[in-house]
Image 1 (cartoon, rainbow, N blue to C red):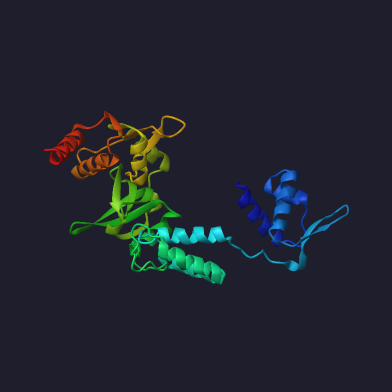
Image 2: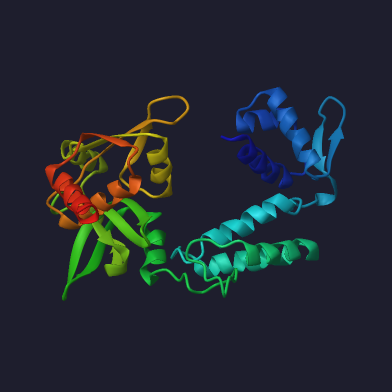
Length: 320
């Protein structure tokens, strides 16, 4: 358990007790005496009015049944929160209404000078997707797909799902074990193991029409799913060496499944390995565009011929 998390839990523990001792804190949180004393001193420094009792059965109590101290933000913490809100506008993130209420509460907690600073930041800072003529903190244009919050709420308690997906003119149902829910190129996607086909598939959240837990009696164990997936692991067919300029481009944008392994302690060279499904023409086109985006600071160790042909064709267009 991290120190900050432990201290917060100890604060709640002692706030609900008329009296406590160092020994009780040691036993309850499995920490040493010196750690318990340091944590108590930090809690006192944060504003909780603890009174020490001397004697054989001495200990501590919270003066006047005081409640936990109010949360206070430093100037830099306020700016960090505000800029995080700004940077995530128009990203179709879930819980938009809650984000709005958080922003309103934040503005209500701070001083006029701090509010003036945020107004100035809102005028100066622009992020991708921001309308420069209407850079408002509580912009409603980033409303996510209505199924996203329902999906998140269900998967927090159960990852075995029955999803209904619109495919062309039909509605298809799939029992899946959800592997990941991720956001790429402005679209929310479900990566799931389809229990009937026993294969990994990607479903756009925008195409969902319904989602609910899958009946327990029809499920496959998670252990079996992991075994099936390990047997289906795709071999890497794209291997690149990246220099510093290509690494900088990679950090600006890269497909979710592509990752780097740095080859020196300064992180100026790296190896990239990934799998390209050459049967998917859209994926081949996308990876071709991305390789051109990485620039000239790459060395190709291995590449599918379909991708290589796409690169050659693209280069002929630019260099006739």
